Amino acid sequence: MKRSVWPVIQDYSDRLDPDPPHAQQVCRLSGMLFDDLRPLHHLPPDTRDLLKAAALLHDIGWSIADKPHHKASRDIILNDTTMNLTSRERKIIALIARYHRKSHPRPDHAVFKELCEDDKQIVSWCSGILRVADVLDRAHQNLVREIRCFIASEEIVLSCTCKTSFYYDLPVFAEKSMLLQELTHRRICLSCT
Image (cartoon, rainbow, N blue to C red; front, side, top):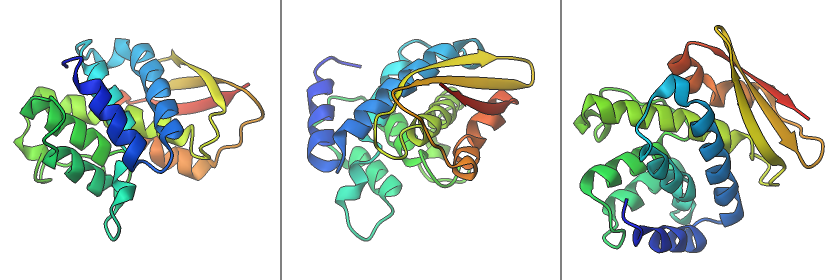
């Protein structure tokens, strides 16, 4: 992605996201997860920038009333004319933001079905990572300092170093980590210290 796009993305986040520090934290955690899961996803290194952009923009849809915010985020990104993105980058970023909650990517979804198979994999993996990063800052308190992934044959342990005691809602974590579990064929476990 072109360097000139980052100030515009940051401006969108600052103006339209009700909690830009949450987006920054989710972006940071997403990067850590992406790096540690590289042995499983094998995505090109430039994919990390697409994930980073989607993480910064995932909640901008809250600025539109009467529409689910994940779909509104997608639409804002797709309809934008100021971000210096290629059509491919725009679609991928918009879809990663769209799939940060609710339904998983499906072959019959309008924009998703337009992508080539490699880009569908990028959207799926990055959405799975973004969902987990988002749930790790669900309280919007920036409690997780660092996250490391320990990959075993049947599970992935996400080891979080936290600023203070970290409470997480197990059913919500299970739901948000489901896409990543499906992609990795491994149970996702969380350990916080």
